Picture 1 (cartoon, rainbow, N blue to C red):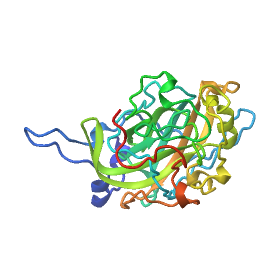
Picture 2: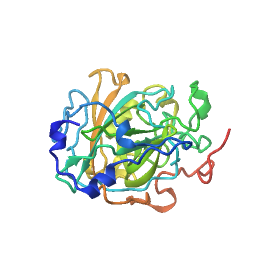
Picture 3: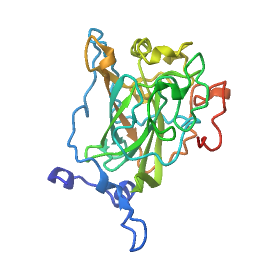
Picture 4: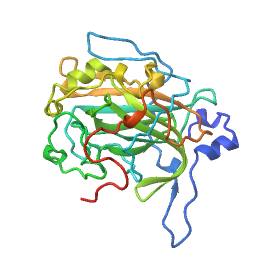
Length: 313
């Protein structure tokens, strides 16, 4: 830990909230405190800055949301326990590359970083399918999930955890999600504290925040004209019509997106956002959402309902 971080005033309650556990005794499965697994990156770029709009480059931006408590929303019907701790969650799934950078801030402690927070994300593939629920119909007309030619594990692809470094930063390598009826393009996210890394996943502690990250309509629609997204035809739900997005920019999960190549969207995007949380709070995942009804959280109206245990085949 640097001298700068040693000088920070951290209460005992805060230390317990964001710290990990102890190593298990002899003969038991080793469980190590999460701080031991935090990224060793020293990335500080982006914290405390305001984004700008650049239509010339095709990038979409929003205010950073610094020191703003994020709005919690429903986790939706596609959550699975046991996601792996890893940076790259693609497992060979094809799509437009997305480098996602998330900073977790403590809105109760002078907007300081929440070092050791475990950030969990999950989202659908380019045709609207989630791992664990690959028989659920994404709506419109799409090839079967297993026709994409990937060797991805249909229980784990596009799901994962990362543990925040000293600056509260995590990074993921993934793809831009596709869409499914009746939802807009989005990524699900949870922030956990007080748990532990064990057997390649993250266990224990509590969930402080459950939310969703969103994509600007213009960029999403441009991406959906590309392969493999274009093989999924039908009506894409825009942000203003989405049942979950609250229309409040970065505070509601709108990502700042910057193209890797100004003239070629297929090269990918960099997505950034700051998540302001209360590390003492506990979130059930029920959350809110502007819509509700039978499709709240994104359950498609057709196909196998995503309830109970995921399929084993």
